[in-house]
Length: 478
Image 1 (cartoon, helix red, strand yellow):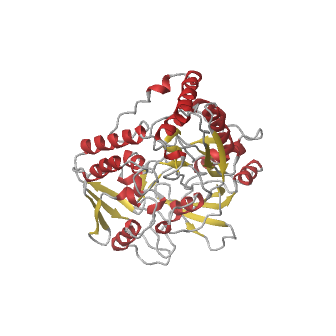
Image 2: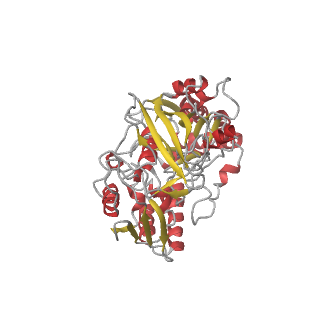
Image 3: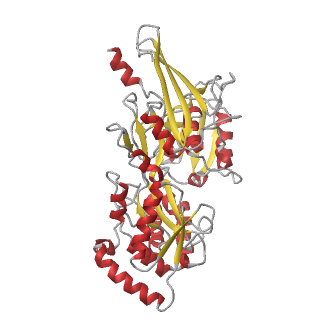
């Protein structure tokens, strides 16, 4: 592969980087048509940038917008677009961007994140290159949401970069190309990425054979595949992901609808033993919906029972289960798990913990009737609203109408302190009702070769493909 050079007016080729995403081969998708899979999200982030985008460390950097201003009251974001063209040579305009964004948040859209932009009042093109987004109430995390792949700007299946799809792409892989002018060095840098998708075990094997430079999209379910003895040191990287990882009732009837049972189940889980079995550095037990580090909220207090050693809890919980069910047969709980080694670790831990109080666990396949479903999602922003609104009525089969009223009040609140207070109250009600049995934070991992130096972990689990090899090639050139 060619080394990076920086000589006046000379083109610098950084070499081809092969990236595999765990799952189906990446394809261009319309976020308004439904949730994006891992490959679709990575592809859209890199060929269809939004108004802003994430850099390697998860910070906001310019995308279509070269700069932006926020009014002092936080109710207006004004974006000045780059002078940029669509792949067919037509000029990109603020009118087009406004129309495409409105389409993603329209009532008929199935965009997974459209509810997070519920505070938007209007999206108005002011000139050909200036766009205003006005809000009903201040939302300091708006840019984080607009950087998500769900709000990539696409027209007729084409975006504006930072990469373009090369015409010579082969089946099941996409060749992505990017050129960047460095005016200070008077050079043009060229980046090439071969992007594909494979099942987790096959992706890990390709990495070990040095057929892939970077593997993205790992979760708890496929983590054991990455524990190979042949894995190079420091190749396995974990994102400090924020979000939801736990169990929620899958139907409004049956044993999962019983609040007292849900409380018993939550208290019976040895969360630290689960974390030890998964062996993820820095992962902490969690028994609350809200996690530390969210906008405007104090770190949540763990429930008092978390301070009681699990051995002591089990004796008390077994007695409580006996009182609750009496002579009746204790229920068998059906939980939907993927067919993957990490999921089997979780299933076995739950079977052991709940078995200690007489509850049986039965694993079922996705799509089959279940009592509980596993929720494994990374938060799209640092707002507590996403955590709370994930459990509103209409979204989940077992809900709390009073929590919904608090959410509605928070959405319409114009005072930030009041809004955060209402969200905190709603979160507390969801915890009290055990509508979500939290376990820990979501697990997201990648495999990174020493040929890739521009990679960084971040709380959003989003990874740009730009400048992956830049630093390494510069060192070689030196």
